[in-house]
Length: 144
Image 1 (tube, one colour):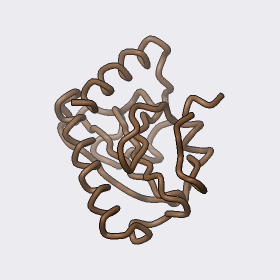
Image 2: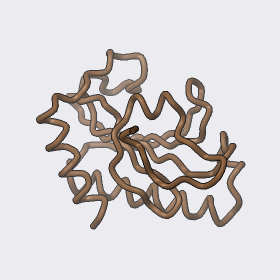
Image 3: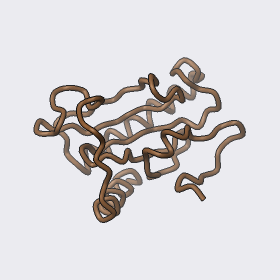
Image 4: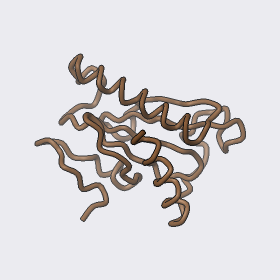
């Protein structure tokens, strides 16, 4: 069974690339909250469970408001738990068309600073020990 086995609305499933690249953290009212498997950066993915959504404009106003609130919640959780110098928030979709939002904690001494994280370095998967520690820290912050 997939590590991403959550109840999903009819017609919605997590894109296979996101499923391969992430670990589940939380199931919020609109989004599944995922941890990108890249130890270079504390990196969350919010995946709205809306079938067929590829753009923010595919969400109705209530869903857009819910997504904004959940992005804010994710940002505040990262600020409280890992104290970044900067938060990067983006919805790109160039590689994975399914609507998802990146919330990335950045530090002045991180591997990509000050450039975007994409294309700078190959992802460094978490070690099993580091993954357990990071997941516990973030789940605590995300549930606060």
